Image (tube, rainbow over all chains, first blue to last red; front, side, top):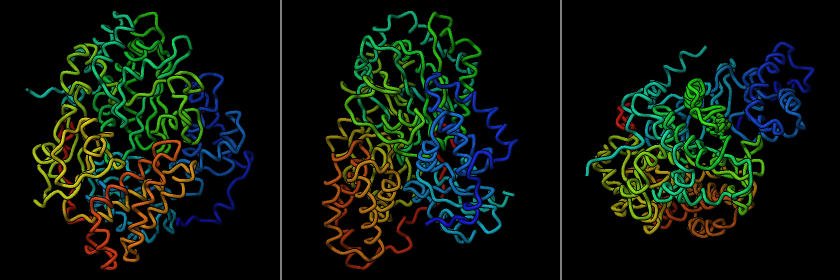
Length: 177
Length: 439
């Protein structure tokens, strides 16, 4: 069970008008290049990339951010919501400044992935999906990252770290602001 | 016979640039292909007996001939979703030799009269997506990919499309849904993608490794490729070895290489010196083999005859210190997490199996739970739109069948006899050998 900050979720922007103007302008400047990768009559194909762009700009996919992506692709808001909630890399709740994702699938656990995840839960004082009180780190257990021969692996802010020991993990986390 | 390296030949040079690739003869195969009739290329691929490296092992040339003659446009989707637990090979083709993949894509598109291709890469592969974008930019700048394919009157555009975390999107019809900007719900088949695919148009979906073989096949001919393997399955393939071995890594071997030899001679066997207890030979969905069953060829049909699958080439080795209930329960958790939820048997059955296994592992299981685990998979197999249901059922069936006593011991002893050590005694991260590169 994940432990989201429900108060923050409730304070989340609901409509496009609630989003900061400068960030919306940034999104609008970057979305045409993404849409341009698909045939002109299939703008909606840019949904995954559009949501990724919005998440990068706004930090997470609030209802307002989801509506913005759908609106610019000419799709109903519910289409953005169903995609945002289907894929695990989208955050539909606020997350910490850094997201740490540890693989605990078989190849990783055989080489210490499970131990690393248990160590981090204790060290950070959070459960799977939880964020530290200071808002610094969100910890998640994730599925196979395709680093089986160089296991165990984790993602820190979507960048892969491999062949980890508990000491490596402590060092990497120590460097996060 | 001396070893032949097709896919990994350039990896140790660590030069993925276009200049480096061309200096080693890269894109000469594309030139040769462009001087051939497209039907001749398709014919050579058929003769090569190249079989899909993503998991299903379907003959590539045969798949290509399913395209209807008169419908345009056609699309190519390159499956770089690599998510089957134990599989980690396509990422290295992209990291170490992306132009080999791009040349393969260009050859396939020319042969099949396709002018738009998408490389669908899993969202977690950020570094690899950047490597592809860089290689594509080089190929466009050089005039290889673009309005005039290598200067010919043939337009080809290739784009990278990133996933966002969903195992199911490696399934070809879910991949197309995802490319269309939707959640990854697999489609009913038939119609197959070659007839009704991306945006309803004929579409070929090939795995990264499959396409990366094309430059070699065009250069040396289909007969030379099939000669490396068996009469029905040609070439070499990338085997990903992980878990309890001295030297895990990516090993390029003939498709029919011996599994035991790979584990003991190439990878040095378990570092503990303990015996191998279990091997998952082709990614976590393939039925498990006991340590005494691994003296087999890894070719698709050979492993099928041995009751399992060559799948995606992901070999996971476990020594006798690893608890089979723990390992299976983690695999069951994966499929429960990744079930898309569309079909009832899979949506309901996968968490049920996970729950039963957790109970047994933690000492709350009963004998009838074990019996239920023997029946449940049969009610999922073949009852779902896509193969995820089968993929979830097969490991459960095989682990319980082959290690039944261990499951019953958990019931009798009210928990895992190994306690905290359920994942075994091996922990250290070892040096890996990735296509000849030490990591």
